[in-house]
Length: 132
Image (cartoon, rainbow, N blue to C red; front, top):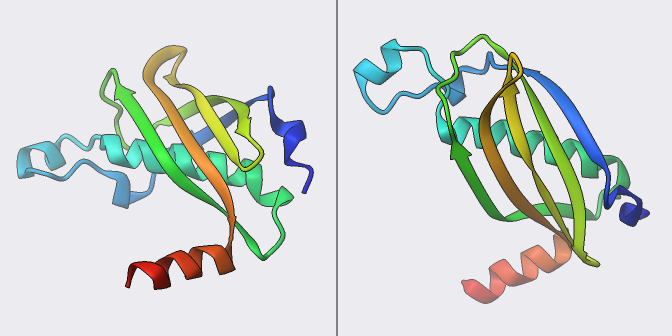
């Protein structure tokens, strides 16, 4: 795994918001506005961070989200295309921090930070067994 070379890089993703599972639907009135939920926006961000790490991980390793923070600044409509810009930093040998912003038509819509820890499937399974 040559993950260290990702550290310090900045990546940009163009994402069309068309997945119905990210629609804000806490109330009927909210659902009728056809807006993206904050948790749905975070789901898109996690997908982008995962896609950055995936090519560097063998099938025995996972990049697990251990921390996430988002500030949703303005509403976003379903069906729009946003740009997710993220900077990657390696905080420790097994942790990567992704921070950046979501933009729509050049306007800042959200700020985020998320951290993923690299672990093995075996280690994750062992921790689950210990908790049971």
